[in-house]
Length: 213
Image (tube, rainbow, N blue to C red; front, side):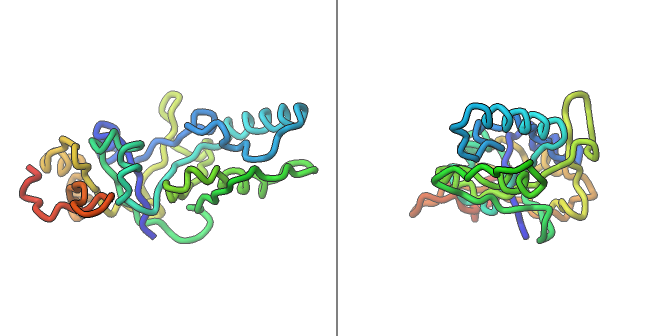
């Protein structure tokens, strides 16, 4: 399936040049309910779950994708207000890339010792207001990831195959810059610039690619 990673111009060029995506740490995600999707009214249980979340933060990170690229809200929130790019990847169906589930209410708390399936449940549960993201997630074990200082990266591979680069309407990446970042290895990768649709609230491919220098 095709999934999209939204990012800024600068970070996007680095990702393409270095053939890798930055792994987000669990405690640094923009939603404080991440890994806390349970109903935690009980103070003692809440403290236990926070400690459990902190332990997972030391073991795992997340790379987040969307199944769509036409949403103007995604470009606004995650691609520097349409000045960034969306990178399309072909990824395998299966257990590596999992679709997020959206709920209006929080999950009941397991009344037993937490196990691996609980990680999967809370990893993939978000408040329904986030539904516009159409999110898929890859859970990365930090021990197996590429480390550089305090940062961790997931490298491009057969399971994260670069397939497409979509340039935002306000993005100042030139064709030449993008070609240099892709190099000969990815010279075949499709790339195009987008614009706001004229008749709907959508982002569409700009048919006149001659406008992109």
